[in-house]
Figure 1 (cartoon, helix red, strand yellow):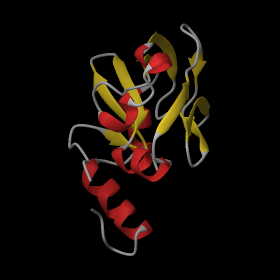
Figure 2 (cartoon, helix red, strand yellow; figure 1 turned 30 degrees about the vertical axis):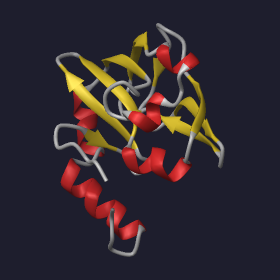
Figure 3 (cartoon, helix red, strand yellow; figure 1 turned 90 degrees about the horizontal axis):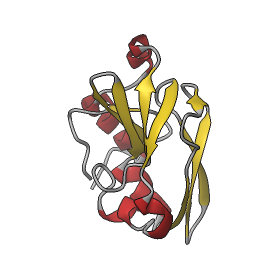
Length: 133
C-alpha cells in the first residue's frame, strides 16, 4: 500500500497535500482499494466553504458509496473535473491524477488533528490485524 510521507491523513482515509496556502484533497490508496472500482465522484462546488471533518464529497464504487470528509477547513478553489468523466483515476493514481479538489487553507493549526504517514500506517495496520499490503 502506498502511503506518501509528505501528506496528512484522516481516520476516514482522506489525505491532504499542503502546498503554500492551498491543500490538495483526495482519498487514500487504502480507501480506493477497499472500495474497489470507482464509478462516480461527486465533487463540491467551486468557492464552497468546507469545514474540517465535515462531509464535502462523495465517491461511489461497484461495492459501495462513501462520504468524503474535509481534512482541513477552507474554500474550494479548484476541482479535478477529470474525475467527472474518468472516476477510475482515483483507483489508478489516488495521490496525483485522482485528487478531488483544492482548497485555500483556513487554519493550518488544524494539522494537529491529522495523522502523518507513519501514524496513518500504524492506524491502517490496526484495522487489518497488523498487516498492510
